[in-house]
Length: 234
Image 1 (tube, helix red, strand yellow):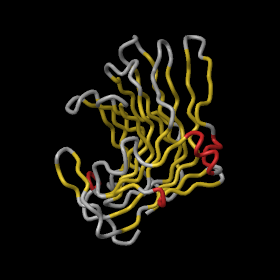
Image 2 (cartoon, helix red, strand yellow):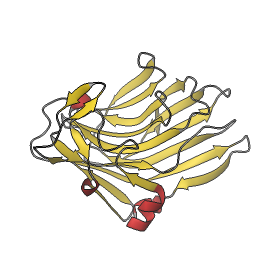
Image 3 (cartoon, rainbow, N blue to C red):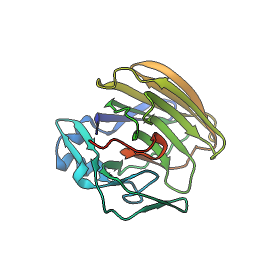
Image 4 (tube, rainbow, N blue to C red):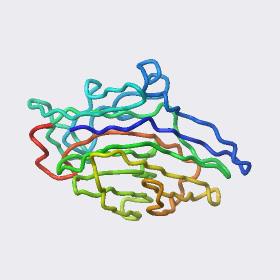
């Protein structure tokens, strides 16, 4: 099962003059040297998270500005653990995270953009997301596909206080543009706007997000919230 993303262009806006700088360039998936400048393999905390796939460097490929994450069915892996629960590992898959941390400053913000071709098969769980460096939340799922034929846009203020919108994800075999704009509102909260193919899909408020550093992650998780069992041929 493949999850492909053309290189994300991440822009930072600083102060009221809206000075713009590119943080991760479109060339970051051109070569190993380019990749190593901006990205690390796996999740920031390791190889496991909340699904049935363990991340492995072997499942990450990139060239000519395109990243491909591939899941492979496996057996014999030790269980993962999440939230005190054991999770059976049925796949090896791929994840990367940016070396840069993203921290909204006074009057500033970020644009996160990329072109994605994502599977919507039951049991597949690709995501393009931000999560807190220190504790949790904040979390912004800038694009999440959970095996339902839809794409989800989510903002977590707490585990029970969240905003979300699910949109039908047509033509999953084609690339779609994803953009998320995050802006300071009042030196406490931030606005979060989600776009797909140039159209605004949702606007959320991240309560208390200001000044909290965020990880940027792109991954192909499996099973978990996307349903089980996952595909047997990937």
